[in-house]
Length: 121
Image (cartoon, rainbow, N blue to C red; front, top):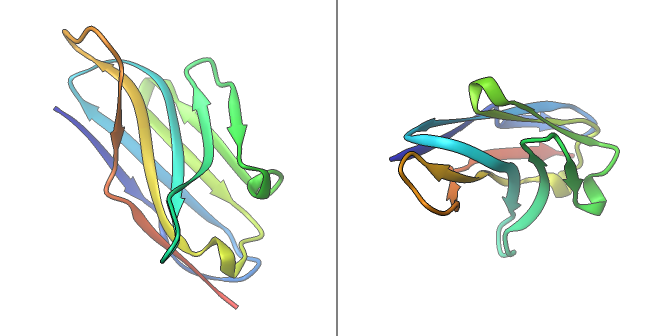
């Protein structure tokens, strides 16, 4: 079994910062990619940022320059530093890992339960 546990969400004023963390644990053989997605009320889940095991990153356009994704491969942990937060960043943020389990043949997507980020104006 694989678990992804997010932390670091909360309430912050516009212009403030938050740092999210997500630790993956369980029967993990290798993690190809980790990332963050978010879902605001009434909207579809959208990409925030991803990072590969080789630390290649990809950001959604509106997050570039404000958010920074990083990763600690030894700890199977991914971070999301969010600066200059805006009310429209309010959403549930979900951690994602595309990984292969011990004894597994293929990689699959796994998801955390999400952490709420609320930005007040």
